[in-house]
Image 1: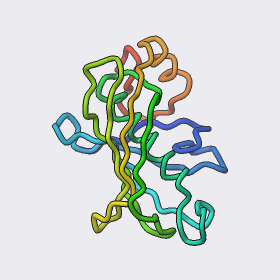
Image 2: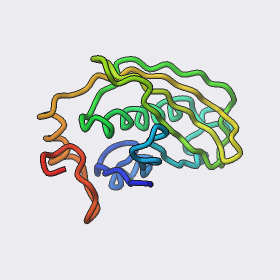
Image 3: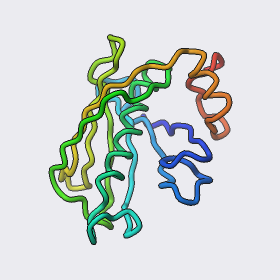
Length: 164
């Protein structure tokens, strides 16, 4: 089962009204299973390059930070913030390649939630691997962000509010 996640207007990654942002739609794949993951698709253009024809590593890091942060947030119904991120750049990411960015929870039983992420193409070529630790926000902070910052499509599940 696939579920689209809410977005915000101004977010650099998912902001649908940010003219300088990436305008990425994230989704939950395999909801409620051991394989549950937050996934996004992205095709970098020349605007996202560092060296000619290669996506800037900071864009890779941004994509992974966001999908990895949403993985425990969705599972635990609490937003979180990255406190530690590490990246292993395996291969240069070519501009124009359709990418799949995914994040999966490894451990969410402690004060810091651990998540692993990957950027790969449709053929399964892995370009970047990542691991992050995320600190959960309070239920009140999550609920406030849900009510003020996040934009839901009609009928879409509210994630962090008491209604959800």
